[in-house]
Image 1 (cartoon, rainbow, N blue to C red):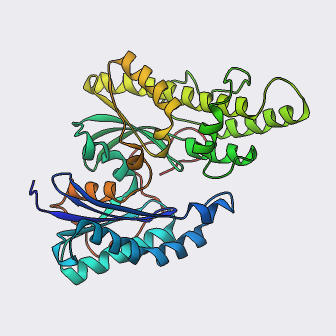
Image 2 (cartoon, one colour):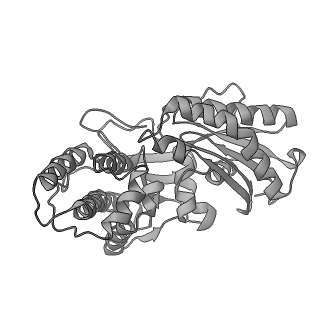
Image 3 (cartoon, one colour):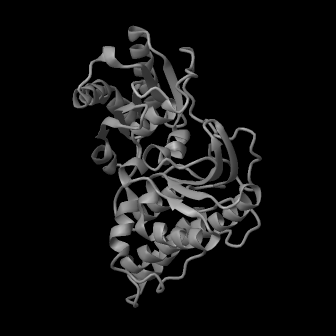
Amino acid sequence: MNDTFLMLGIESSCDETAAAIVNSDGTILASEVASQMEVHAAHGGVVPEIAARAHLDAIDVVIGRAMETAGIAMGDLDGGAATGGPGLIGGVVVGTVAAKAIATARRIPYYAVNHLEGHALSPRLVDKVGFPYLLLLVSGGHTQLLAVRAPGIYERYGTTMDDAAGEAFDKSAKIMGLGYPGGPAIERIAAKGNARLVQLPRPLRGANHCHFSFSGLKTAVATRLAAIEADDGEAGIPDLAASLQAAIADCLADRAKRAMARFADAHGPATLVIAGGVAANKAIFTRLETEADKAGFALSVPPAWLCTDNAAMIAWAALERKDSPDDLDFAPRPRWPLDPDAAPPPGRGVRA
């Protein structure tokens, strides 16, 4: 791979406006993020219209900061990439238009990157994990298990039937009055609680497939919270938070255990990669580390900043296929599955 190919990456699929400059040898020259967290915290979650306007306001500034940090000019870029989906379509359009404009003006290749593929390939940016490997993608909007064979080649083992794990954290945190984003808030207060004091279900534990379901946990949390508020018993909010965290960790570990067995049958034991914002949760990491060790799998988790939405992973995903750019007529996609041929799970719907 040419070690002088400089890729601009842009990420704007949700509530982070990000730009990064990454060299094809894996050197991250700049990674800048403008967060909208405070804006959306007042609403208890991301408001798509507000997010799209914020991306418009921030995109030029963030790209400029990335160029300045990297110490390069637009004329030094060899390629421009942006998240083309899935995500909130307003934000995806903002990033896509910016990347296309730069690619057109500078006459460089343009790359439309699947946001999920950015997460899927992110461990190779820092850990050089070899193909194939098993991926647990666990974020605010997605919970999936996939065999990653090569860039663009994925086999989905399981996905969520309803809420993603990150949604279960966010919605439960809102119910408990802990604020947004819910995952970090619950992890902080759970450290003060006893996970054994509140009984919560483990949906689909022991099922003969690799799919997930988390919506029932949200309902159970609301029921247990009402009981806690009505009774001056032993359990409190920290205990409920700790119990929820343990329940989600158990569900993820149980499904990952089945997926590792399936992957090992096809490819032999390899590496289990955990990517996405929820991967930063230490209790979940510890639980999955135990299961990976039992199954004979190595465990790879990108650093926390690379697990949340960022543009370095978008630039790297484009670099993984730098000789195959996209046409400028690419249309942004609100949904874009990594494995379009995967059979839908039983239940209400599929997250792509």
